[in-house]
Image (tube, rainbow, N blue to C red):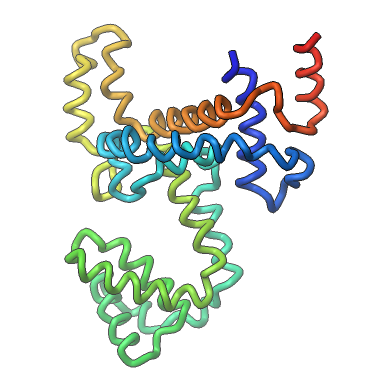
Length: 264
């Protein structure tokens, strides 16, 4: 009952933290409204180190977005965040398409574009716009390169691109996490659906044998979306229980009215 009563307040606080640009903190919470988040931090951190890391290995979230379940537990709005397409529109405002090296358009493959970007870096001719394109290209061929090579050049392109994209990158990285938390099926290291995991966990649950709906539970446990929703709920519950619902600290008239009715 405490969780049920306190969750709306904690969710409002989470929104206040995640979106200060369009919601005024003062209109939602008093000075003590974030107390529960601080008190719940050890629980959420422990979830990220333990259950969260195991769950991510099952769902494949560990490949592209390691630690995302702990992030979802800390931020209840993450799972509902913008997708990459919407977040990527910010780049259009800060990047000049005319500054992309013309030679990039003549490259017959992603490997050749990577080689051309390396040459431009060594000649100190790669623009931030070119580095941005090279960074995207490199991420697409990551699995064809040695780990050390990928990390080295990813860092170089990232530093150059951030001369223009520093303000936009955090929003895009958040969008990657938000989309990952909404994926319905387990992922492989290449960023696609893991047929192997689907087969294994379908067999464990006897899904193909036409058994009861409960047989689908092993398969559901590998779903990033199911795990994301669970992590979000765990975070909300931890923060709710860390605060006394009686001292909600909200100034919202609707919530205050509900509290008054409950007291009567």
